[in-house]
Image (cartoon, rainbow, N blue to C red; front, side):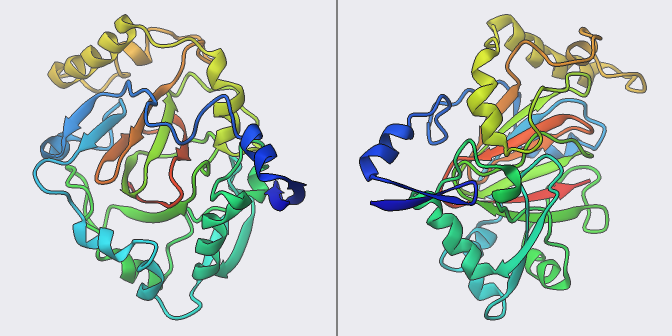
Length: 302
């Protein structure tokens, strides 16, 4: 028998029983999650600013950015960048990140690598019991460490204008749907799946759970994107870039459906691999789900 932690409570089950229960509706470790977000080369990032109205996936051009930072942040090396027993502040994974917990960094790494006996956050764990290093990395120690990170080369990205946030989670961890200002998020280790909706299409979700709960219980009920949807999304970028008047509301995909409320279709989504970034627009609803046992990322808020 082994003990499995489910939402902070311990339940005993055999390995065979646990494996049977692991057949979830949405496979967190799949290599075949869809991507319907427009992709651009890293060479084009300088043309992207905080008013760009659509999400973008940015893949590296030439050599990978932040290769040195990648070495510093492996699971074996990360703790050595700080004093022994360096404490980190964890957030709850619910929509409001409404709880905090402070523990040593090495303890957090051990907890996520062995969570539930499989290094995984499960779909029905409450968000306030799914601790996550995310968004609480603004102390002087973190600022010193993050100087080693090369920020994106967007047209308004400077050290003075960008707030950096460092994060680590295990497979299945992530933050429930929420909104904030624009920015970039680069995956350093592991893979991170993003789901997004435009401002007027607020999804239906239970804010007390982490993001994997929505993927497990709501995502599969929605319609798949059609080829026409994908083509419209691609064309929207070209129209925005060639339209000289960008003072009005964004075009096409943000304005064609003025009814406020959940979309009947699946979200904008893509898996961000190591060395890739996503640009998330201002006030878009989004949630994230880490796909690997050790997923490490840096977000740059504009």
